[in-house]
Image: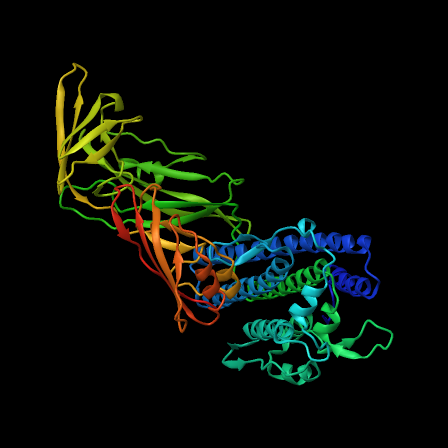
Length: 570
Protein backbone atom coordinates (compact mmCIF):
# COMPACT_ATOMS: atom_id res chain seq x y z
CA UNK A 1 0.00 0.00 0.00
CA UNK A 2 1.12 3.56 -0.69
CA UNK A 3 1.74 6.27 1.87
CA UNK A 4 2.79 9.89 2.32
CA UNK A 5 5.43 10.62 4.93
CA UNK A 6 5.90 7.21 6.56
CA UNK A 7 6.74 6.42 10.18
CA UNK A 8 9.53 3.89 10.89
CA UNK A 9 6.87 1.26 11.69
CA UNK A 10 5.09 1.90 8.37
CA UNK A 11 8.42 1.53 6.54
CA UNK A 12 8.97 -1.80 8.31
CA UNK A 13 5.51 -2.97 7.25
CA UNK A 14 6.31 -1.98 3.66
CA UNK A 15 9.49 -4.03 3.81
CA UNK A 16 7.42 -7.01 4.98
CA UNK A 17 5.29 -6.69 1.83
CA UNK A 18 8.43 -6.69 -0.33
CA UNK A 19 9.76 -9.78 1.45
CA UNK A 20 6.41 -11.56 1.04
CA UNK A 21 6.33 -10.77 -2.69
CA UNK A 22 9.97 -11.79 -3.17
CA UNK A 23 9.46 -15.10 -1.40
CA UNK A 24 6.46 -15.88 -3.57
CA UNK A 25 8.64 -15.44 -6.67
CA UNK A 26 11.03 -18.18 -5.50
CA UNK A 27 10.71 -21.91 -5.87
CA UNK A 28 9.09 -22.49 -2.49
CA UNK A 29 11.11 -24.84 -0.27
CA UNK A 30 10.26 -26.08 3.20
CA UNK A 31 12.65 -23.50 4.66
CA UNK A 32 11.01 -20.66 2.74
CA UNK A 33 7.56 -21.81 3.83
CA UNK A 34 8.72 -21.85 7.44
CA UNK A 35 9.98 -18.27 6.95
CA UNK A 36 6.41 -17.14 6.32
CA UNK A 37 5.47 -18.33 9.81
CA UNK A 38 8.25 -16.14 11.25
CA UNK A 39 7.11 -13.15 9.19
CA UNK A 40 3.51 -13.67 10.28
CA UNK A 41 4.61 -13.77 13.93
CA UNK A 42 6.45 -10.45 13.52
CA UNK A 43 3.36 -8.95 11.91
CA UNK A 44 1.34 -10.23 14.88
CA UNK A 45 3.72 -8.53 17.33
CA UNK A 46 3.39 -5.25 15.43
CA UNK A 47 -0.38 -5.66 15.47
CA UNK A 48 -0.41 -5.99 19.27
CA UNK A 49 1.65 -2.79 19.64
CA UNK A 50 -0.73 -0.84 17.38
CA UNK A 51 -3.78 -2.24 19.21
CA UNK A 52 -2.35 -1.06 22.55
CA UNK A 53 -1.75 2.38 21.06
CA UNK A 54 -5.37 2.56 19.89
CA UNK A 55 -6.62 1.45 23.32
CA UNK A 56 -4.59 4.24 24.94
CA UNK A 57 -6.07 6.73 22.48
CA UNK A 58 -9.66 5.64 23.19
CA UNK A 59 -8.83 5.86 26.90
CA UNK A 60 -7.71 9.44 26.22
CA UNK A 61 -11.29 10.37 25.25
CA UNK A 62 -12.46 9.57 28.78
CA UNK A 63 -9.60 11.59 30.24
CA UNK A 64 -10.58 14.55 28.06
CA UNK A 65 -14.21 14.19 29.12
CA UNK A 66 -13.25 14.14 32.79
CA UNK A 67 -11.22 17.31 32.29
CA UNK A 68 -14.03 19.13 30.49
CA UNK A 69 -16.63 18.15 33.08
CA UNK A 70 -14.40 19.07 36.01
CA UNK A 71 -13.91 22.56 34.56
CA UNK A 72 -17.67 22.88 33.85
CA UNK A 73 -16.97 22.97 30.11
CA UNK A 74 -19.36 22.29 27.23
CA UNK A 75 -19.42 18.67 26.01
CA UNK A 76 -20.97 19.40 22.59
CA UNK A 77 -17.68 19.27 20.68
CA UNK A 78 -16.49 16.27 22.72
CA UNK A 79 -19.66 14.31 21.93
CA UNK A 80 -19.29 15.07 18.21
CA UNK A 81 -15.73 13.70 17.95
CA UNK A 82 -16.32 10.89 20.45
CA UNK A 83 -19.25 9.58 18.38
CA UNK A 84 -16.93 9.54 15.35
CA UNK A 85 -14.37 7.57 17.39
CA UNK A 86 -16.99 4.99 18.41
CA UNK A 87 -18.02 4.64 14.74
CA UNK A 88 -14.37 4.19 13.76
CA UNK A 89 -13.94 1.51 16.42
CA UNK A 90 -17.02 -0.37 15.19
CA UNK A 91 -16.01 -0.21 11.51
CA UNK A 92 -12.52 -1.47 12.35
CA UNK A 93 -13.90 -4.42 14.34
CA UNK A 94 -16.13 -5.39 11.40
CA UNK A 95 -13.24 -5.10 8.91
CA UNK A 96 -10.82 -7.13 11.05
CA UNK A 97 -13.54 -9.77 11.53
CA UNK A 98 -13.97 -9.92 7.73
CA UNK A 99 -10.24 -10.38 7.00
CA UNK A 100 -9.75 -12.97 9.75
CA UNK A 101 -12.92 -14.72 8.61
CA UNK A 102 -11.55 -15.05 5.06
CA UNK A 103 -8.26 -16.36 6.44
CA UNK A 104 -10.03 -18.85 8.72
CA UNK A 105 -12.24 -20.19 5.90
CA UNK A 106 -9.19 -20.65 3.66
CA UNK A 107 -7.21 -22.55 6.34
CA UNK A 108 -10.28 -24.61 7.25
CA UNK A 109 -10.46 -25.87 3.65
CA UNK A 110 -6.82 -26.95 3.94
CA UNK A 111 -6.91 -28.42 7.46
CA UNK A 112 -10.54 -29.55 7.68
CA UNK A 113 -11.23 -27.79 10.96
CA UNK A 114 -12.12 -24.32 12.22
CA UNK A 115 -9.13 -22.02 12.74
CA UNK A 116 -10.75 -19.35 14.94
CA UNK A 117 -9.17 -19.00 18.39
CA UNK A 118 -11.01 -16.06 19.97
CA UNK A 119 -13.99 -13.72 19.50
CA UNK A 120 -14.92 -10.57 21.40
CA UNK A 121 -18.13 -9.98 23.36
CA UNK A 122 -19.90 -8.95 20.12
CA UNK A 123 -18.94 -12.15 18.30
CA UNK A 124 -16.28 -10.52 16.10
CA UNK A 125 -13.18 -12.64 15.38
CA UNK A 126 -10.10 -11.20 17.12
CA UNK A 127 -7.52 -13.99 16.87
CA UNK A 128 -6.78 -17.13 14.83
CA UNK A 129 -4.82 -20.21 15.79
CA UNK A 130 -1.03 -20.06 15.07
CA UNK A 131 0.18 -20.81 11.54
CA UNK A 132 2.79 -23.17 13.00
CA UNK A 133 -0.06 -25.61 13.75
CA UNK A 134 -0.97 -25.97 10.05
CA UNK A 135 -0.03 -29.45 8.86
CA UNK A 136 -0.24 -28.74 5.10
CA UNK A 137 1.75 -25.51 4.98
CA UNK A 138 2.77 -25.92 1.34
CA UNK A 139 -0.78 -26.29 -0.03
CA UNK A 140 -1.15 -23.65 -2.73
CA UNK A 141 -4.19 -25.02 -4.59
CA UNK A 142 -6.68 -23.83 -1.96
CA UNK A 143 -5.42 -20.18 -1.74
CA UNK A 144 -5.22 -19.97 -5.54
CA UNK A 145 -8.78 -21.22 -6.12
CA UNK A 146 -10.08 -19.39 -3.01
CA UNK A 147 -8.99 -15.89 -4.10
CA UNK A 148 -8.42 -16.25 -7.87
CA UNK A 149 -10.22 -19.18 -9.46
CA UNK A 150 -9.24 -20.74 -12.77
CA UNK A 151 -8.29 -17.57 -14.68
CA UNK A 152 -5.62 -15.29 -13.12
CA UNK A 153 -6.48 -12.54 -15.63
CA UNK A 154 -10.02 -12.50 -14.24
CA UNK A 155 -9.91 -13.36 -10.52
CA UNK A 156 -13.09 -14.47 -8.78
CA UNK A 157 -15.44 -12.29 -6.76
CA UNK A 158 -13.78 -13.17 -3.44
CA UNK A 159 -10.39 -11.91 -4.61
CA UNK A 160 -11.88 -8.71 -6.01
CA UNK A 161 -13.98 -8.14 -2.88
CA UNK A 162 -10.90 -8.20 -0.66
CA UNK A 163 -9.46 -5.10 -2.33
CA UNK A 164 -12.88 -3.45 -2.72
CA UNK A 165 -13.80 -3.92 0.95
CA UNK A 166 -10.50 -2.45 2.14
CA UNK A 167 -11.09 0.54 -0.13
CA UNK A 168 -14.63 0.91 1.21
CA UNK A 169 -13.21 0.95 4.75
CA UNK A 170 -10.59 3.49 3.66
CA UNK A 171 -13.25 5.76 2.16
CA UNK A 172 -15.48 5.55 5.23
CA UNK A 173 -12.79 6.45 7.78
CA UNK A 174 -11.44 9.28 5.60
CA UNK A 175 -15.00 10.61 5.51
CA UNK A 176 -15.20 10.32 9.31
CA UNK A 177 -12.07 12.46 9.52
CA UNK A 178 -12.96 15.16 7.01
CA UNK A 179 -16.73 15.69 7.21
CA UNK A 180 -17.64 18.32 9.83
CA UNK A 181 -18.58 21.96 10.35
CA UNK A 182 -16.11 24.46 11.81
CA UNK A 183 -16.61 28.19 12.32
CA UNK A 184 -19.93 28.02 10.40
CA UNK A 185 -18.24 26.45 7.38
CA UNK A 186 -18.89 22.85 6.30
CA UNK A 187 -16.01 20.70 5.09
CA UNK A 188 -16.29 17.33 3.37
CA UNK A 189 -14.42 14.64 1.51
CA UNK A 190 -15.80 12.73 -1.47
CA UNK A 191 -13.59 9.64 -1.99
CA UNK A 192 -12.16 9.63 -5.54
CA UNK A 193 -12.45 6.61 -7.81
CA UNK A 194 -8.66 6.44 -8.28
CA UNK A 195 -5.68 7.66 -6.30
CA UNK A 196 -4.75 9.94 -9.24
CA UNK A 197 -7.85 12.02 -8.46
CA UNK A 198 -7.00 12.35 -4.75
CA UNK A 199 -5.46 15.81 -4.98
CA UNK A 200 -8.66 17.33 -6.43
CA UNK A 201 -10.82 15.47 -3.88
CA UNK A 202 -8.81 17.03 -1.03
CA UNK A 203 -9.76 20.56 -2.12
CA UNK A 204 -13.05 20.35 -0.16
CA UNK A 205 -11.24 19.19 3.00
CA UNK A 206 -10.23 21.74 5.63
CA UNK A 207 -6.67 22.85 4.81
CA UNK A 208 -5.31 21.83 8.24
CA UNK A 209 -6.62 18.25 7.74
CA UNK A 210 -5.59 17.54 4.16
CA UNK A 211 -2.19 16.00 4.89
CA UNK A 212 -3.58 13.55 7.47
CA UNK A 213 -6.54 12.53 5.29
CA UNK A 214 -4.13 12.01 2.39
CA UNK A 215 -1.83 9.80 4.49
CA UNK A 216 -4.68 7.54 5.65
CA UNK A 217 -6.08 7.32 2.12
CA UNK A 218 -2.72 6.30 0.65
CA UNK A 219 -1.97 3.90 3.52
CA UNK A 220 -5.09 1.88 2.70
CA UNK A 221 -4.92 2.13 -1.10
CA UNK A 222 -4.20 -1.06 -3.06
CA UNK A 223 -3.14 -0.88 -6.75
CA UNK A 224 -5.51 -2.44 -9.23
CA UNK A 225 -2.65 -4.29 -10.97
CA UNK A 226 0.92 -5.41 -10.21
CA UNK A 227 3.71 -6.83 -12.33
CA UNK A 228 3.51 -10.62 -12.44
CA UNK A 229 6.16 -12.72 -10.67
CA UNK A 230 7.18 -14.64 -13.81
CA UNK A 231 9.74 -13.71 -16.45
CA UNK A 232 7.25 -11.81 -18.63
CA UNK A 233 6.50 -9.25 -15.85
CA UNK A 234 3.10 -8.40 -17.34
CA UNK A 235 0.39 -6.41 -15.55
CA UNK A 236 -1.90 -8.70 -13.59
CA UNK A 237 -4.79 -8.06 -11.14
CA UNK A 238 -3.55 -7.40 -7.60
CA UNK A 239 -5.20 -10.47 -6.06
CA UNK A 240 -3.75 -12.75 -8.76
CA UNK A 241 -0.19 -11.57 -8.14
CA UNK A 242 -0.56 -11.86 -4.35
CA UNK A 243 -2.28 -15.27 -4.17
CA UNK A 244 -1.44 -17.19 -7.36
CA UNK A 245 0.27 -20.41 -6.25
CA UNK A 246 0.90 -18.90 -2.82
CA UNK A 247 1.28 -21.54 -0.07
CA UNK A 248 -1.44 -21.28 2.55
CA UNK A 249 0.99 -19.84 5.14
CA UNK A 250 2.05 -17.14 2.64
CA UNK A 251 -1.58 -16.26 1.85
CA UNK A 252 -2.35 -16.10 5.59
CA UNK A 253 0.66 -13.79 6.11
CA UNK A 254 -0.60 -11.49 3.36
CA UNK A 255 -4.00 -11.29 5.07
CA UNK A 256 -2.27 -10.60 8.41
CA UNK A 257 -0.39 -7.73 6.77
CA UNK A 258 -3.68 -6.33 5.41
CA UNK A 259 -5.19 -6.56 8.91
CA UNK A 260 -2.17 -4.68 10.27
CA UNK A 261 -2.78 -1.88 7.75
CA UNK A 262 -6.42 -1.67 8.89
CA UNK A 263 -5.33 -1.37 12.54
CA UNK A 264 -2.64 1.16 11.65
CA UNK A 265 -5.27 3.25 9.85
CA UNK A 266 -7.53 3.04 12.90
CA UNK A 267 -4.70 4.19 15.19
CA UNK A 268 -3.94 7.23 13.00
CA UNK A 269 -7.58 8.27 12.70
CA UNK A 270 -8.31 7.75 16.42
CA UNK A 271 -5.32 9.93 17.35
CA UNK A 272 -6.50 12.58 14.87
CA UNK A 273 -10.02 12.60 16.36
CA UNK A 274 -8.69 12.90 19.93
CA UNK A 275 -6.55 15.89 18.98
CA UNK A 276 -9.66 17.64 17.66
CA UNK A 277 -11.04 17.93 21.21
CA UNK A 278 -9.81 21.00 23.06
CA UNK A 279 -9.81 20.43 26.80
CA UNK A 280 -7.65 19.56 29.80
CA UNK A 281 -6.67 15.94 30.40
CA UNK A 282 -7.17 14.54 33.89
CA UNK A 283 -4.69 11.79 34.62
CA UNK A 284 -6.24 8.61 36.03
CA UNK A 285 -5.16 4.98 36.16
CA UNK A 286 -8.05 3.37 38.05
CA UNK A 287 -11.79 3.17 37.43
CA UNK A 288 -14.33 2.07 40.05
CA UNK A 289 -18.15 1.97 40.09
CA UNK A 290 -19.95 4.04 42.74
CA UNK A 291 -23.57 3.96 43.89
CA UNK A 292 -25.05 6.77 45.96
CA UNK A 293 -28.37 8.36 46.94
CA UNK A 294 -29.40 11.59 48.73
CA UNK A 295 -29.82 9.45 51.87
CA UNK A 296 -28.91 5.88 52.74
CA UNK A 297 -31.81 5.52 55.21
CA UNK A 298 -35.45 5.02 54.21
CA UNK A 299 -38.61 4.62 56.24
CA UNK A 300 -41.39 2.28 55.14
CA UNK A 301 -43.23 3.73 52.15
CA UNK A 302 -40.37 6.08 51.21
CA UNK A 303 -38.50 5.98 47.89
CA UNK A 304 -35.20 7.31 46.62
CA UNK A 305 -33.25 7.54 43.37
CA UNK A 306 -29.91 5.74 43.39
CA UNK A 307 -27.28 7.04 40.98
CA UNK A 308 -24.67 4.66 39.58
CA UNK A 309 -21.52 6.38 38.38
CA UNK A 310 -17.94 5.49 37.51
CA UNK A 311 -15.12 7.16 39.41
CA UNK A 312 -11.79 7.58 37.60
CA UNK A 313 -8.78 8.62 39.64
CA UNK A 314 -4.98 8.60 39.87
CA UNK A 315 -3.99 6.11 42.57
CA UNK A 316 -0.45 7.53 42.64
CA UNK A 317 -1.72 10.94 43.77
CA UNK A 318 -2.95 11.02 47.41
CA UNK A 319 -5.85 13.48 47.57
CA UNK A 320 -5.94 16.16 50.24
CA UNK A 321 -9.32 16.36 51.98
CA UNK A 322 -10.83 19.00 54.26
CA UNK A 323 -14.01 18.22 56.19
CA UNK A 324 -16.25 18.88 59.16
CA UNK A 325 -19.11 16.88 60.76
CA UNK A 326 -22.42 18.31 62.05
CA UNK A 327 -21.66 21.52 63.99
CA UNK A 328 -18.15 21.61 62.47
CA UNK A 329 -19.38 21.83 58.85
CA UNK A 330 -18.55 25.56 58.79
CA UNK A 331 -15.28 26.01 56.89
CA UNK A 332 -13.45 27.59 59.82
CA UNK A 333 -13.76 24.33 61.80
CA UNK A 334 -12.65 21.93 59.03
CA UNK A 335 -9.91 19.36 59.61
CA UNK A 336 -7.48 18.19 56.91
CA UNK A 337 -6.55 14.59 56.10
CA UNK A 338 -5.12 12.54 53.25
CA UNK A 339 -7.01 9.30 53.80
CA UNK A 340 -10.41 7.84 54.63
CA UNK A 341 -12.72 9.67 57.05
CA UNK A 342 -13.94 7.56 59.97
CA UNK A 343 -17.49 8.38 61.06
CA UNK A 344 -19.59 7.29 64.04
CA UNK A 345 -22.43 8.87 65.92
CA UNK A 346 -25.59 8.67 67.96
CA UNK A 347 -29.01 7.78 66.58
CA UNK A 348 -30.29 10.38 64.13
CA UNK A 349 -29.30 12.30 60.99
CA UNK A 350 -25.79 13.61 60.41
CA UNK A 351 -23.98 15.68 57.79
CA UNK A 352 -20.36 15.85 56.61
CA UNK A 353 -19.24 18.78 54.48
CA UNK A 354 -15.85 19.59 52.99
CA UNK A 355 -13.63 20.00 49.92
CA UNK A 356 -11.17 17.80 48.02
CA UNK A 357 -7.97 19.08 46.41
CA UNK A 358 -7.62 18.23 42.70
CA UNK A 359 -4.65 18.99 40.47
CA UNK A 360 -5.78 20.76 37.28
CA UNK A 361 -2.91 21.53 34.88
CA UNK A 362 -0.54 21.35 37.84
CA UNK A 363 -2.57 23.77 40.02
CA UNK A 364 -4.33 22.51 43.17
CA UNK A 365 -8.00 23.47 43.14
CA UNK A 366 -10.55 22.72 45.88
CA UNK A 367 -13.86 21.16 44.87
CA UNK A 368 -16.73 21.10 47.43
CA UNK A 369 -18.55 17.90 48.50
CA UNK A 370 -21.05 16.84 51.16
CA UNK A 371 -22.51 13.59 52.52
CA UNK A 372 -25.62 12.89 54.65
CA UNK A 373 -25.99 9.75 56.75
CA UNK A 374 -28.29 8.35 59.42
CA UNK A 375 -27.58 6.22 62.50
CA UNK A 376 -30.61 4.03 63.23
CA UNK A 377 -31.87 1.53 65.81
CA UNK A 378 -31.15 -2.23 65.36
CA UNK A 379 -33.61 -3.97 63.02
CA UNK A 380 -33.86 -7.25 61.11
CA UNK A 381 -33.99 -7.72 57.34
CA UNK A 382 -33.93 -10.68 54.95
CA UNK A 383 -31.99 -10.01 51.77
CA UNK A 384 -31.79 -12.06 48.60
CA UNK A 385 -28.45 -11.57 46.85
CA UNK A 386 -29.52 -13.61 43.81
CA UNK A 387 -33.20 -12.71 43.23
CA UNK A 388 -36.44 -11.14 44.49
CA UNK A 389 -38.65 -14.22 44.17
CA UNK A 390 -38.34 -17.93 44.94
CA UNK A 391 -38.02 -20.25 41.93
CA UNK A 392 -39.20 -23.85 41.78
CA UNK A 393 -36.45 -26.40 41.25
CA UNK A 394 -33.73 -23.88 42.12
CA UNK A 395 -31.44 -23.40 45.16
CA UNK A 396 -32.71 -19.94 46.16
CA UNK A 397 -30.06 -18.30 48.33
CA UNK A 398 -31.14 -15.83 51.03
CA UNK A 399 -29.16 -14.23 53.83
CA UNK A 400 -30.29 -12.66 57.07
CA UNK A 401 -28.99 -9.33 58.33
CA UNK A 402 -29.85 -7.79 61.69
CA UNK A 403 -28.18 -4.55 62.66
CA UNK A 404 -26.50 -4.84 66.05
CA UNK A 405 -26.45 -8.66 66.10
CA UNK A 406 -23.57 -10.98 65.09
CA UNK A 407 -24.19 -13.30 62.13
CA UNK A 408 -24.05 -16.44 64.26
CA UNK A 409 -26.99 -15.27 66.42
CA UNK A 410 -29.34 -14.81 63.43
CA UNK A 411 -31.66 -17.53 62.12
CA UNK A 412 -34.27 -17.79 59.35
CA UNK A 413 -37.37 -19.98 59.36
CA UNK A 414 -40.21 -20.30 56.89
CA UNK A 415 -43.50 -21.81 55.78
CA UNK A 416 -44.42 -23.13 52.32
CA UNK A 417 -40.79 -24.09 51.78
CA UNK A 418 -37.86 -26.05 53.21
CA UNK A 419 -34.78 -24.20 54.47
CA UNK A 420 -31.20 -25.40 54.77
CA UNK A 421 -28.42 -23.34 56.37
CA UNK A 422 -25.07 -23.14 54.55
CA UNK A 423 -22.20 -20.81 55.51
CA UNK A 424 -21.66 -17.08 56.17
CA UNK A 425 -25.24 -16.58 57.31
CA UNK A 426 -26.73 -17.82 54.01
CA UNK A 427 -29.65 -20.23 53.56
CA UNK A 428 -30.91 -22.32 50.64
CA UNK A 429 -34.70 -22.11 50.28
CA UNK A 430 -36.62 -24.74 48.25
CA UNK A 431 -40.33 -24.00 47.64
CA UNK A 432 -42.77 -26.82 48.43
CA UNK A 433 -44.66 -28.37 45.52
CA UNK A 434 -48.08 -26.82 44.86
CA UNK A 435 -47.45 -23.58 46.77
CA UNK A 436 -47.67 -20.15 45.19
CA UNK A 437 -46.30 -18.22 48.16
CA UNK A 438 -43.80 -18.75 50.98
CA UNK A 439 -43.12 -16.78 54.16
CA UNK A 440 -39.63 -16.29 55.60
CA UNK A 441 -39.07 -15.03 59.13
CA UNK A 442 -35.89 -13.67 60.72
CA UNK A 443 -35.01 -13.75 64.41
CA UNK A 444 -31.92 -13.24 66.54
CA UNK A 445 -30.74 -14.17 70.03
CA UNK A 446 -29.63 -11.36 72.31
CA UNK A 447 -26.73 -11.51 74.77
CA UNK A 448 -28.92 -13.37 77.26
CA UNK A 449 -29.89 -16.06 74.71
CA UNK A 450 -33.44 -14.78 74.35
CA UNK A 451 -34.95 -15.14 70.82
CA UNK A 452 -36.20 -11.85 69.36
CA UNK A 453 -38.54 -11.86 66.35
CA UNK A 454 -37.32 -9.16 63.93
CA UNK A 455 -39.75 -9.54 61.02
CA UNK A 456 -41.38 -11.82 58.45
CA UNK A 457 -41.65 -11.44 54.68
CA UNK A 458 -43.84 -12.97 51.94
CA UNK A 459 -42.32 -14.23 48.69
CA UNK A 460 -43.92 -15.24 45.40
CA UNK A 461 -43.09 -18.70 44.07
CA UNK A 462 -42.57 -18.86 40.31
CA UNK A 463 -41.40 -21.40 37.76
CA UNK A 464 -37.86 -21.07 36.39
CA UNK A 465 -37.46 -18.34 33.70
CA UNK A 466 -37.38 -19.32 30.04
CA UNK A 467 -33.81 -19.73 28.79
CA UNK A 468 -32.29 -18.06 25.74
CA UNK A 469 -30.68 -20.27 23.11
CA UNK A 470 -27.33 -19.55 21.42
CA UNK A 471 -25.74 -20.97 18.27
CA UNK A 472 -22.16 -20.84 19.50
CA UNK A 473 -21.99 -17.17 20.55
CA UNK A 474 -24.74 -16.10 18.14
CA UNK A 475 -27.95 -14.97 19.82
CA UNK A 476 -31.35 -13.96 18.48
CA UNK A 477 -31.29 -10.57 16.75
CA UNK A 478 -27.58 -10.75 15.81
CA UNK A 479 -26.29 -10.25 12.26
CA UNK A 480 -23.33 -12.68 12.16
CA UNK A 481 -21.04 -13.27 9.19
CA UNK A 482 -21.71 -16.35 7.08
CA UNK A 483 -18.39 -17.82 8.18
CA UNK A 484 -19.37 -17.38 11.84
CA UNK A 485 -22.66 -19.23 11.20
CA UNK A 486 -21.16 -22.15 9.29
CA UNK A 487 -18.42 -22.67 11.89
CA UNK A 488 -20.92 -23.48 14.65
CA UNK A 489 -21.86 -27.06 15.59
CA UNK A 490 -23.76 -26.87 18.86
CA UNK A 491 -26.63 -25.09 20.60
CA UNK A 492 -26.21 -23.89 24.18
CA UNK A 493 -28.72 -22.50 26.69
CA UNK A 494 -28.40 -19.77 29.29
CA UNK A 495 -30.47 -17.06 30.86
CA UNK A 496 -30.54 -13.52 29.54
CA UNK A 497 -28.80 -10.68 31.44
CA UNK A 498 -32.12 -9.69 33.04
CA UNK A 499 -32.18 -13.00 35.00
CA UNK A 500 -29.74 -12.74 37.88
CA UNK A 501 -29.36 -16.43 38.73
CA UNK A 502 -26.30 -18.57 39.25
CA UNK A 503 -25.65 -21.18 36.49
CA UNK A 504 -28.44 -23.76 36.17
CA UNK A 505 -28.15 -27.14 34.46
CA UNK A 506 -30.27 -27.10 31.30
CA UNK A 507 -30.38 -29.96 28.77
CA UNK A 508 -31.46 -29.67 25.14
CA UNK A 509 -34.02 -32.35 24.23
CA UNK A 510 -34.66 -31.59 20.57
CA UNK A 511 -35.07 -28.79 18.06
CA UNK A 512 -35.39 -27.72 14.45
CA UNK A 513 -33.28 -25.49 12.18
CA UNK A 514 -34.86 -23.71 9.22
CA UNK A 515 -33.50 -21.22 6.69
CA UNK A 516 -35.59 -18.71 4.75
CA UNK A 517 -36.44 -20.00 1.28
CA UNK A 518 -35.22 -23.58 1.93
CA UNK A 519 -37.91 -26.23 2.35
CA UNK A 520 -35.59 -28.72 4.02
CA UNK A 521 -35.22 -28.51 7.81
CA UNK A 522 -32.37 -29.62 10.04
CA UNK A 523 -32.55 -31.06 13.51
CA UNK A 524 -30.98 -30.31 16.85
CA UNK A 525 -30.13 -33.60 18.53
CA UNK A 526 -30.39 -34.29 22.26
CA UNK A 527 -27.56 -32.46 23.97
CA UNK A 528 -27.58 -29.60 21.43
CA UNK A 529 -25.48 -30.92 18.52
CA UNK A 530 -26.67 -30.03 14.99
CA UNK A 531 -27.28 -32.92 12.59
CA UNK A 532 -25.89 -33.05 9.05
CA UNK A 533 -29.07 -31.58 7.51
CA UNK A 534 -28.85 -28.56 9.81
CA UNK A 535 -25.19 -27.99 8.92
CA UNK A 536 -26.01 -28.31 5.21
CA UNK A 537 -28.77 -25.68 5.16
CA UNK A 538 -26.70 -23.30 7.34
CA UNK A 539 -24.06 -23.36 4.61
CA UNK A 540 -26.79 -22.01 2.27
CA UNK A 541 -27.89 -19.23 4.67
CA UNK A 542 -25.82 -16.29 3.38
CA UNK A 543 -28.13 -13.25 3.28
CA UNK A 544 -31.06 -15.27 4.67
CA UNK A 545 -32.97 -15.45 7.94
CA UNK A 546 -32.24 -18.47 10.16
CA UNK A 547 -34.75 -19.72 12.77
CA UNK A 548 -33.93 -22.32 15.44
CA UNK A 549 -36.61 -23.73 17.77
CA UNK A 550 -35.72 -25.79 20.86
CA UNK A 551 -37.17 -27.94 23.64
CA UNK A 552 -35.19 -28.39 26.86
CA UNK A 553 -35.36 -29.38 30.52
CA UNK A 554 -34.09 -27.23 33.40
CA UNK A 555 -33.32 -28.23 37.01
CA UNK A 556 -37.06 -28.42 37.77
CA UNK A 557 -37.19 -31.30 35.22
CA UNK A 558 -40.03 -29.64 33.32
CA UNK A 559 -39.97 -29.70 29.51
CA UNK A 560 -40.01 -26.16 28.09
CA UNK A 561 -39.54 -24.29 24.85
CA UNK A 562 -36.65 -21.80 24.84
CA UNK A 563 -36.77 -18.40 23.24
CA UNK A 564 -36.12 -19.07 19.52
CA UNK A 565 -32.88 -17.98 17.83
CA UNK A 566 -33.73 -15.74 14.87
CA UNK A 567 -30.95 -13.94 12.99
CA UNK A 568 -29.88 -12.97 9.48
CA UNK A 569 -26.61 -14.35 8.14
CA UNK A 570 -24.40 -11.79 6.36
